[in-house]
Image (cartoon, rainbow, N blue to C red; front, side, top):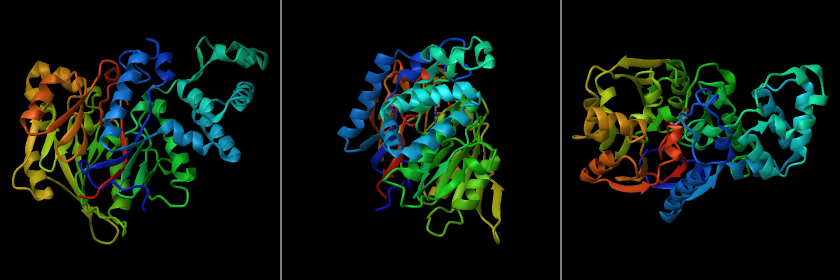
Length: 408
Ligand SMILES: NC(=O)NCCC[C@H](N)C(=O)O
């Protein structure tokens, strides 16, 4: 069986990748919050309880939950792979000072595989390696910055560093250096994990060959033929063209069209899935502030190896009806479009739902106005606690990467 299969946003979810929030969030301080893309510091103990509730809900619904940290710990059991993984990780962390690098490697060699991965994710404080000052004058004079390796607090948003499309993935180049190291985990898992290593997973986008950016929150699979992608604060139009050139021409794939949605490039709307998700065959959540400003481009195969790109001159509802073959669709506005409630609930990911089956979604408890509206629209709503997880600015869709969904 194919180890990856995602051809829908809403088809019954079978297998999903999560990361249980870890010590990385305890390495956040006010000085580095903004650069690390957080707006506040989650309380780890509660964040973990909330995350465990999310995972339990999924397993209770029959979804196989696998954890990023376990998958990569399995990969680094091979000593040669472990060594090359550590080298690439340190390169991408910009750790080139020979003395410090040697000390970090020595420290890493004393850790078992799970401890190694947890440390890489959590970040390494200077005071964890007191002997470093002995190595060189440069190292001794380095700044007061407290970390040798920055924490990676965004890892629990497994949606973004790679994204499953069909039986392949986009291995993403993230907009910020802060999140770019996250993609190394996916790179090694799909190359070396026993579930994937003999499978030749197609890469619809490869971060190594390009400088343009794309993040998984901008990749939505509307059905087996149509994909929606956000041109956003995080994803470049050029990256979408790169995906289109591979995916639409792949003989073994079903996809025929990419609808590129140009959304405003601002933090609150960082990815398309913060303002628009699919909740049923004919129902979507939307934040009303994007509707008026939205431009939609349709990308299909053109002649020879070229793409055909046209700007759609219609409302979003009509564009979706046309390409999804529907007579009617509902756009369910975040908090009904009320200026204050919608502003607050979109900020806390009210539009960011994870569908686990058609018409059945996981949402954050705090977005009560939107959740009520979803119910009134006939959607089955599974609520998870959300006081701490939401401080990272991502919701249930951002916190999950589907690996297998049933075909509809
Ligand atoms: N798909 C998503 O919208 N993911 C949420 C990512 C939040 C994270 N703090 C970030 O700014 O990248």
